Length: 245
Image (cartoon, rainbow, N blue to C red):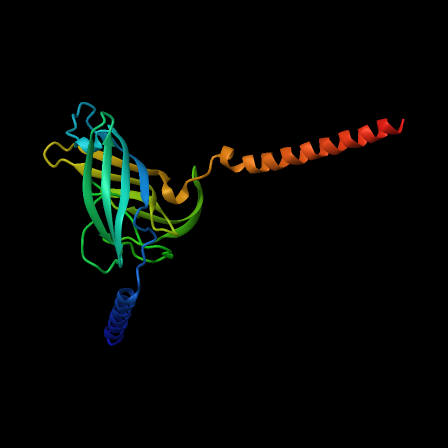
């Protein structure tokens, strides 16, 4: 048994190096392009074991954000450049220039707290890694949204202090939903505080549905024209019948 252990370890090391080589050689293609934009609903929910606790909540997370917009300003290789705009209920806005390298083998840290909306490469499969976080695609699921039915990549995690899930559009890598709870316990007071981030895509130029009034007029016009022609020939035939008498 002891002689077999080094062999097993060697096999595992070879497998890991092979995976890293394959991952580094793969092209992580963005599914978005310059000019694409995405509007999100985003808010936080706080809870505490102390009902009298007073939270010092950052401005962006005080639930006074009317909407968040992501504008793709450039795509270069696997890197997506964005402008992140938070529009508050009082009409003021904050803007930040961001960039995300969708290659999971690249360095860099992503943090949802005030640093933008996650995005991943297009057409990932189950088991593929996400960029900048140690998470992988768990499942592919069909989901229905106001802008249509989408094939999504589902990601979930669960640790003692942080848990949640999110859905990415498989075709584009764009975030559709995120639900994340982070829990913190004050070592001095023993108070446990949890914050839940909720992010939902509301609309995008990629999935703008046409209004019914824009879809039906051609059909209505054609039907109306056919009805007028039919009425004309019926009147013409009736006139001929009257003339015979």
